[in-house]
Image 1 (cartoon, rainbow, N blue to C red):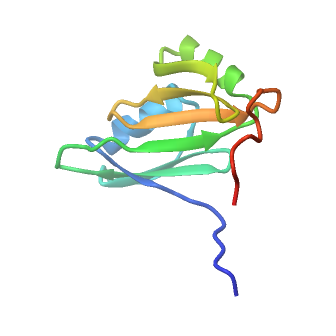
Image 2 (image 1 turned 30 degrees about the vertical axis):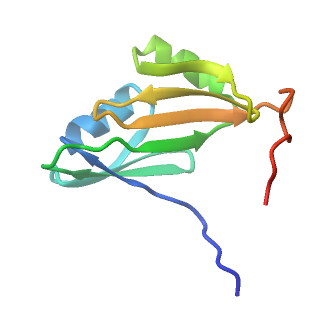
Length: 127
């Protein structure tokens, strides 16, 4: 049997689970799925789930890559909601059209879609 995975759910350390879930709901458009007091919780959007774990230690930045069908539309929504955009939307040399937003804990979400019209789309080795 080959090794196969069906999805990935990162656990992000956060200072405040409740405040983080509220930010992801109100600014980033995620649904709050559940919370165990302010110790652990989950949000989701489409097929993406993120877990949050309360951390007393300083939070170290994590970057999550989220693929979508229209990064430009999400970018416009996030700009309108006042999200902290740390890298504006652009087509990258590797053929992705993407941007990066920073959450209230310093974690980064790189959000993008494949730009098949990019001159470099398909130029990188795969496999």
